Image (tube, rainbow, N blue to C red; front, side, top):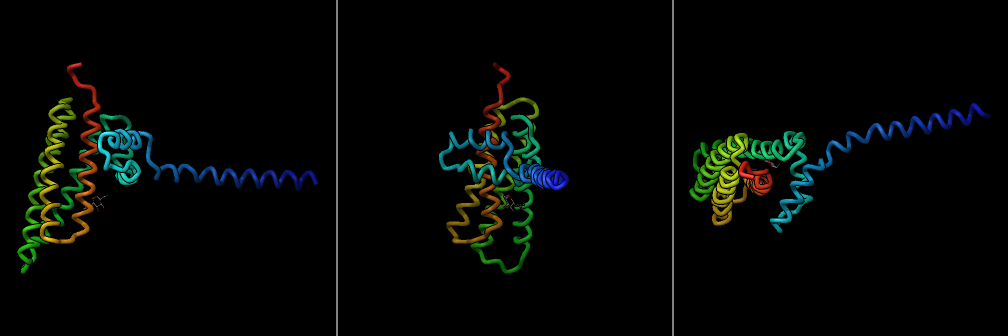
Length: 193
Ligand SMILES: *[C@@H]1O[C@H](CO)[C@@H](O)[C@H](O)[C@H]1NC(C)=O
């Protein structure tokens, strides 16, 4: 009888150990405190930004997940933006090589191609500036990078009534990265203090 009780206790113990051991895997796909922090802080400044969607989006970026402080987070956000813009741009450039594109579609692709190029230049500059501790210049470049350039592409899509989900998803991501990146770099302590 005692043996039976012990083995039931044992099974219960093993079962709960099994459940507990699976928790870290679940935790790794949920937003880190730092991701929640930067999304929450940005949402306070930008009412249209949903902190939950922000966190869900950032969780899919390994370098952002790995960031451990506001400086490495800033760098990770800028790198994620550069990478996404570069990939979305090569998608656009592939489409631009096609023959017989409708003029409207070609116009949209050209606007987006130029927009991603300029986004890239601004974000590469900002990345260098963050690494040098020049945070004021970096926030300026981030703002320039994600506002007008992505607007150009997005406005071309809507004015010509073109639907391209890969481009739209890229634009949504780049704007989010720009907003969170701007807010995060803006929180870094300035050298002048
Ligand atoms: C850019 O990021 C968004 C959001 O994660 C994603 O949906 C999209 O596929 C990415 N674009 C490329 C070309 O990787």
